Length: 322
Image (cartoon, rainbow, N blue to C red):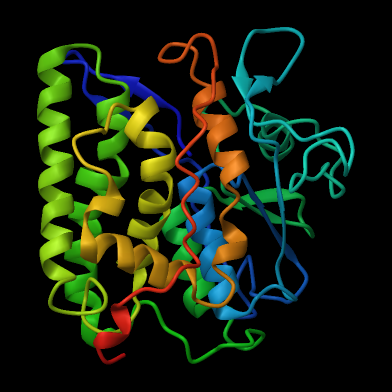
């Protein structure tokens, strides 16, 4: 999840990622798609990291690409300054679902960036796709990692025919990704980090207009681009699953709950129940991070109790063919 800055109008901006190399199925490339060579560093709290983990699970790449999670609460990443960010737990039992860095012995994601580049000056974000052979970061842009997992590791994937970006739907997928990203994925952050009423009002209107658009689309078909699960569905899901539990309260996205939208709520349950995807959702990590790591908007770090939604309950999306 990239750290944000504010522009002169106090709009939320997401900083660009810096490591943009590609893993390729071409074995002569700098980073060939070899089983066992790569590791994905994530946070279960971060939607941008979890969409990569979701594709890893959907493609059946668990045995070929290892992964681990930092702990959910931001901590100091170095004693010499006040930077707060993603850190690893000190032991396997300190935080359930989080792991020490057994590959490099790093104490924080920041240390991994320092290993990869001695003069790195950017943000210390997850996800991080790590090359064990060269001990460096291959890529830290979630949209590109997602595409690599979808196509470049098919020779070692358990579900090689599963395709989130099929050629016949690529135009509509690209168009849908664009407005989902701007209005919803980033939209909740625009609401949460708005520094004046005017900016917040604009952001919240854009967000809920986009959610209404999704609700309308999903009243006609099972998924965003038809009756086949594609990339925008994963991108939208990671925001929806956090919405009622975190964004409604901490980011003031309280105009309407997702569970009040019939199609969106059932759609969220539908995707959650796809084999492997429920394991990518750790609500404890999500709530600890959002309520505990942003003192500017929740200075006391008090975590809301509810609503504790059970996404494993039945849904009605089977009424559409798939």
